[in-house]
Image (cartoon, rainbow, N blue to C red; front, side):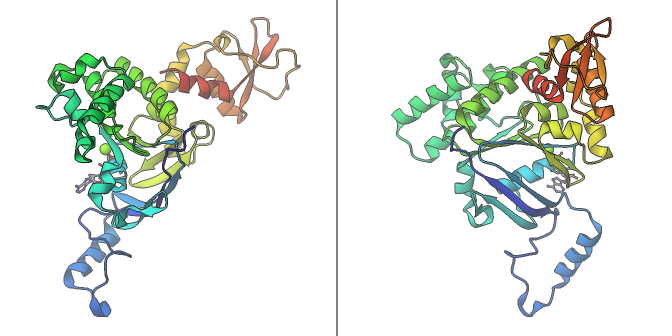
Length: 350
Ligand SMILES: Nc1ncnc2c1ncn2[C@@H]1O[C@H](COP(=O)(O)OP(=O)(O)O)[C@@H](O)[C@H]1O
Ligand SMILES: [Mg+2]
């Protein structure tokens, strides 16, 4: 929607904790002879699996890319390599074609929004002061900072009265909103978010997710969003990168993860999804039906209008087609529903 988002490209990025950078960028020892230390690094590299291994994917301008996978699979490491809070052992990360390793880390970080679960607000600063952190560092005039802080408080759905309060006086959800406002202060073309809504209760979490999606539609920045919750990934992501043990297993649009899981791991991970289970609460009749006047293809799976949407999804996945015929109690066709209707529902609800 907006031309403001950056493109991010990971090229064969690996991270092995405890090892120095080994390829281009770190000079080989003069004469090509490894020191004893480097030999031991090589030896360890051969046996110790990396925290992140050969990660390659591209995030288009303005997209939300979600990194998802079980705890310890390398999500946070990948995110922190993007703004150089962690240095990759090898590989390249390009933001709008520029290698982050060639940027000054401090300047780089000021231009990238960063939101984490514990927010990291300064407890002895007011909300206004917290939000103004980066504009102040950049030397903005006081009047411009005040105006921007007001805009941001409004943008994230807080009342301006919060400006003078301190973090401890806010609820968890309100603090997360302040974290988002602070990250947005200088309109970064890229935002990195690490389990940003993980610490709040489910209802607040859903509200924060919805608010953030609205905000994103309005601002159009690129987002890399980390979660361990496949439900959140499917809801938030334009594209989802499923990781396992430091390796990218599948990078696809949410609907494709559901229909074409790359392997058993993804299939099980998606199958365990709470969001999909919530589809058990909705009946097929609540979805818009298509092609009501058309005689249905007899090879399509058939589902009762009284059935749950979850059952319709299972029927489609079992038969490998993205459509099902909806019938009434007498077995008469009422029309069809598509897999898109269901994935649309997943994105809209929750
Ligand atoms: N500073 C560190 N030193 C050594 N190992 C680490 C460090 N940080 C993370 N790891 C290890 O790297 C792997 C990936 O961690 P992390 O990126 O935090 O995973 P995630 O965010 O997916 O839970 C884990 O095995 C973790 O124990
Ligand atoms: Mg993490």
